[in-house]
Image 1 (cartoon, helix red, strand yellow):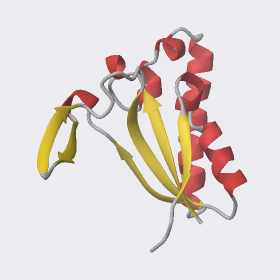
Image 2: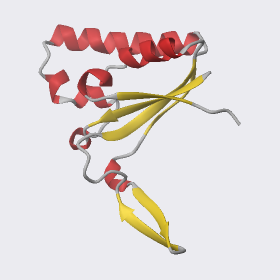
Image 3: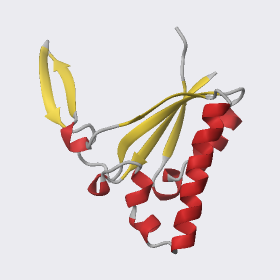
Image 4: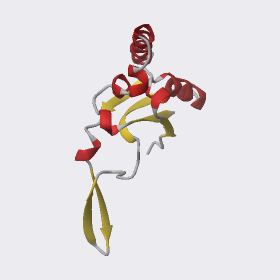
Length: 126
């Protein structure tokens, strides 16, 4: 089954990968930052080599996003996807795993899960 792993981050530090610019990451000792970066790279290699990584995309700054709603047949365009939210959708991985538990395990290893959130959504095929 495919799972969409939605990665969130704080837009005030918008650059990719998001976790490298989080205050919590920057406050860590250098050795811990280096280790977390190695772990992130190892996870990416692992899920690429295993074939579990289907796609991964980093999103542009949320300030450039727009929401479109149609009301009474009239399109209304507003700034940003979630103007009131502290954390914004930063990007995603699409993975194909044998179980939801494996998708949860991968999501937990994405460094951004330490500083914001990673949501796991099963994908409906067809």
